[in-house]
Length: 65
Image (cartoon, rainbow, N blue to C red; front, side):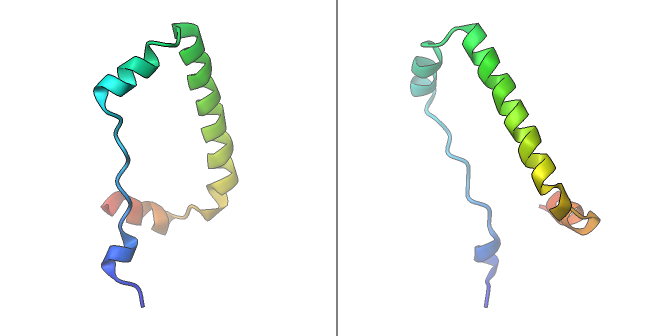
């Protein structure tokens, strides 16, 4: 039997500001732009592959959260 705690979405880890700034300062704007484009493309592929699982009911449930 599931409980309400089974349905909770785990919190997203947040990088500490000093660590994130140290990491991001190692890369130039061109590299981060290319990475952002790659992430966008990967997200689009993932969304397309999962589209069949999205229904009006699942969208409504997601919006209620």
